[in-house]
Image 1 (cartoon, rainbow, N blue to C red):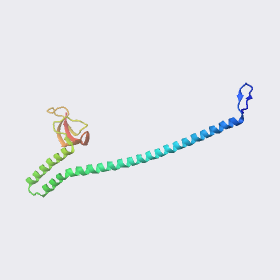
Image 2 (cartoon, rainbow, N blue to C red; image 1 turned 180 degrees about the vertical axis):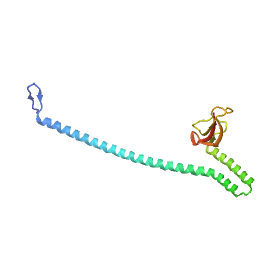
Image 3 (tube, rainbow, N blue to C red; image 1 turned 45 degrees about the horizontal axis):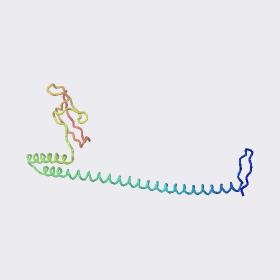
Length: 175
């Protein structure tokens, strides 16, 4: 039977065995909760380690793919340039000046064709308007017979692939 004691404020107080009994139940409940939390921590730690390992593998694979893509791109580009080298070798074997000239003209046409296949555009032609984003003006003249910022001579053609400038055109401008 439960022993009830009156407290000064008229509150009932439970006996020591009942308090101890509830305390043991709470302790068991807390221990079970601690074990459950430990299991969750272990599970989350395992998930974290797996995710970290997967990320490291992803970074390694990405780097390897990037390297492979670069090597393939270089090989494909060189493969497109080989006909130019072949034409230069053929032109170098000619002794007749006209044949050499003809060989160089064929090589120039082949080069333009290869650049077109690769998506490389040339720019910087006489008559174009000077654009500092595309052209490098190395000489400038004042001549009223030309328009404002007009390119009047091209020393080196410029080349670009999409928005990427491979080489700026070296030009002479007027006004």
